[in-house]
Length: 303
Image (cartoon, rainbow, N blue to C red; front, side):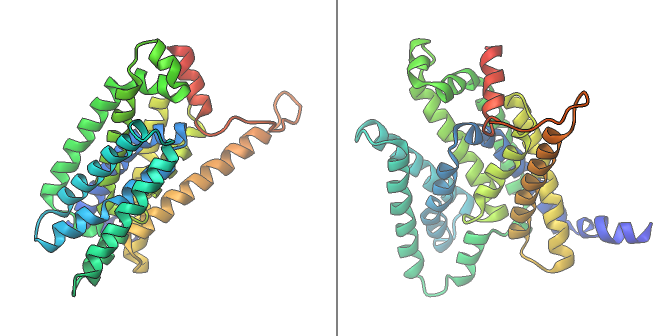
């Protein structure tokens, strides 16, 4: 029907919207791979901190005419290394180390931006994303990033799983918890860098956390949360881009809102399912596990 074509298909017939769709779905898949562990371990603050920590690298790369994606990668990697150093050498708790690195990198980024006379437009793109500006080379980089993330997640699955329960147990089983920490930080770093152009540094956690959390409500395993999160994140990209086309709203923010709404819908449906009568009796929800715990428990029993 013509109205269906106009409503759903017409936006993606343009080349730049088609690239935005592919780029957003690749970024959502990368984020779901890392985000399943972020949700399971309650590490959303790390994703938020890395998202803001990219600001200095992106700002410097933009000012010198370099690749913003490369600048984001270097800045986020430097911040991840700094967090690791603070936790090991300075003996700080993870949240304290993340907070210190977060404030330091964000302040450095603001200083760099403030010293530029004509940076307003670029700063807006950095903070809120510009998924409609994705080019072919960046799609290739995202595809390589997805492949690398999937391989890294598969190789480090058991060490990260053990680390998610107890670092001492991981050390006892010789699963190298230190390597697992670095691998998990690398996964989150790649995901944040990949999704920054889609939703910007301010909203990067939307793709990293909301879709995997929506999938974790139903999933009984970490791989299930990854696959479900990738599907939900991709749907959020489609819905967000379509809304942006018809309503004239910012594409990155529209994608972020769609991702958050997907989590809200998933949670409501799960709540209704838990309240549905079974075998003639009304079932009430009492002390349901936190999001991610059923998946972790299933993974532990399988291991």
